[in-house]
Length: 441
Ligand SMILES: [Mg+2]
Image (cartoon, rainbow, N blue to C red):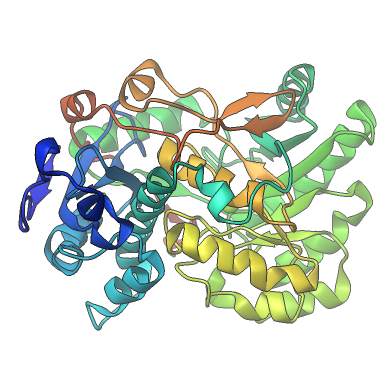
């Protein structure tokens, strides 16, 4: 299944050009006539399914594209859009994005959660795309205009030992990066977050994919929290003080280990330490904040502006890191940034390769327009088939990201290319401790 079309032409089809009048083209008369969803996996890769939303209007050629990708729940999001949200959009004016956000948020009654909110996010981006195209302006102009011309960015390198990590950082530094995310294997572990697996683990992952099952991964946090400060000691000794370094814990340690780790890493002056704990343990951030000055970033699994809001109002973190494909789109991103600004908390929107380039554009539009921007994670290495499906990509040069000035989001989808590459089931690993206990990410 790679294409779903819903409620196409539920209202009148677009007016033929001859019937167009100034009145019919007036913004108040624009109406949504269809919502389509394409689930595509151009590289047929793990975590490479993209859920794309196309909103069609009664104006010839006026469409909007959004990204509702939610890795691990891709088909559920497509069905959410198909059955439960699209009918609430037909006949509505797409320029009323704020009203429509609320309308489809309350439509299911049992609301929120990653599936619903990814669907809302995709619709929201498509509505902003349409708004920009009607105005003839890039979305960042509608959000207040550029506060800066380019966005500080980073990308990650992971290794099975310190030298591999050091070599990776040097490679990015030679390309002009000012900040690099570093990950290292924990001794004795076959896999880990954002590090190369052993050959044994690689074979186990492949075998699980072939059965359509989640790969099994064993994780014990103690050796990881012991080795991590030694990695940063090595990197500061060999690379000096000028390179910005950040690290993602990916929620894989206990609350007590999180407090100790944030304290132990202080001398190495991280750019930030990310996802120390799951969102279920927000209270623990108070303990960490009282004892450590290591900058903290949090938020990629939040599904709304309300999640983690107390981390902002109590100033327990330094960077808000929502994923605009899961938290409610551009509308939520702008609101989160505005809420964080009085506290001096900066933005660092989530920007991995497992969300589509459409979200990367959405990230950039918000990041360009907010005063309290910190850094923008930007993916790199999009494969040739992804480049066949999407018309444009943010450009990375000398450690900064830029986007163009096309009206709307600035990226279109080649639908016939997208339909060639169907959904692929590639489940995320099921992580457990050695005794079998299921463990966070
Ligand atoms: Mg993270």
